Length: 165
Image: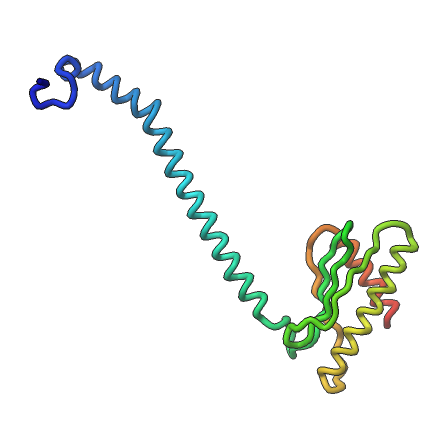
């Protein structure tokens, strides 16, 4: 019998050895395991919360009508190099009127074809604006994403807008 102790009597009689054993167990085994488990749980909670906030923000953004006062159609552009510029004409309620892809990477001829395609989209958006605004003269609202190729896309839009007007 150990006399009511959990630890062997020889260890209880040597407090310096007991202290060293507890210190070793804490520093080598328990602290690392506890810290890792706590860190893992907190990271998972943070990721879950971030996904929830992102989902809520995205839902709000997707359900909101396009921004402009008064509401008007929007030419939305998502720039890209390899896949081209994804284009959508949206009506005042955010409904999709037309989807298109403009490819502009390559030689000058392909770039010019991209500018002409953007001109057509600008004119089509202007028609939607005129149809839905009862003849009021309003400019076309363009929403441009900030992905790869956004600078090049902006330059193409400026050329297309100059040519369309």
